Each structure stands twice: as C-alpha cells, then as structure tokens.
Amino acid sequence: MKRTLMLKKNYEFKRILTKGEYYSGKFLDVFVKKNNFSVNFLGIAVGVKIAKAVKRNRIKRLIRENYRLIEEKVNTGYSIVFLWKKKVDIKHATFTNIEQDMMNVFERIGILEA
Image (cartoon, rainbow, N blue to C red; front, side, top):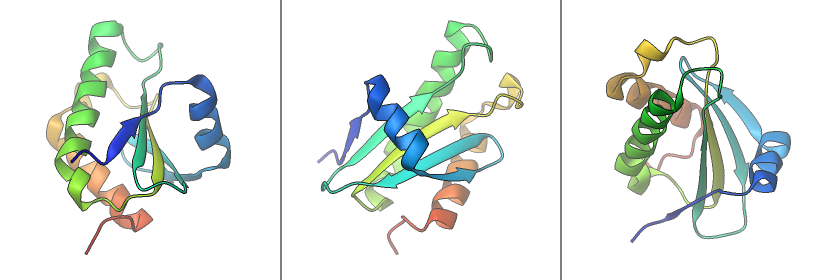
C-alpha cells in the first residue's frame, strides 16, 4: 500500500519550508516536518533557473523514483520537501548520486526504520 501522498498546493510547500527542519545533502536540500497523519507527504521542487523544463522534470522523476524505492523503510507521519541545490550542476543528476544523497540525509534525520 502506498504510504505517501504528494504536496501540490503552494501553501502546503510554504508551511513545510517555513516551519520544517532543514537538512542539507550534497545535491539536495531537505525540509522535514512532523505531521499528525499515518502517511507521509512528499513535495519536490526544482528551480526554474537551474535548467529548462525537460531537465527539471528528469530531476523530479529521479527523486520520485529513489523515494519510491525506499518508501517502505521510511517512518510515516512526516511531510518532506526535496529541493535541488542551485549551485549543483545538472550533469550531477544521476540515479546513484541522488540515491546516496537521499539515504545520507534520511539517516541524519533518523526517519529510516531499523
């Protein structure tokens, strides 16, 4: 069963970005806020200045797929927003780079199940 819903509205993103805790990885910035639900909420944002639409959407797909693969290991009850770092070149957006970065950040946050 899917344990994650997507954030879509601007006010949902703003709430996480202002009140959530900030964690930085090599390629991703992650904001996490505890919620009172039995599901996770996931938001992904890639800035317009980083690249054109095709490459931005590719980064979002890679992040979404990496999260999908580790979704069962992530504890429920969190709202998570992933931001691609502006200073990182688009050529570093590979599946393995994002996977390693996501795992490192999640271990630091402490939301992975043992």
